[in-house]
Length: 68
Image 1 (cartoon, helix red, strand yellow):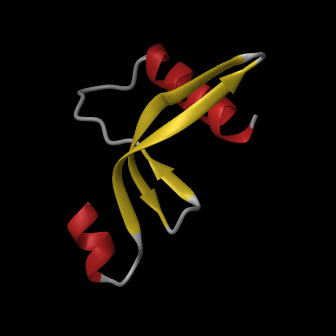
Image 2 (image 1 turned 30 degrees about the vertical axis):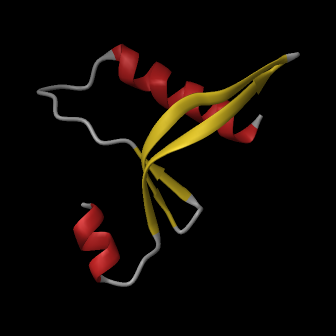
């Protein structure tokens, strides 16, 4: 996916560390985003047979950590 996105001219960062702040706790690496496209879209890549409830929780957590 990285290759395809950069091949069409998009700016893509791989495995970028995303800091997280929760109350008074600051973590330099709250999580690592698989791909960040144009500093606007986070893409988390999965190789699974089916989506499980934990995947929704991961999505919500990354949204919370990046938007406060």
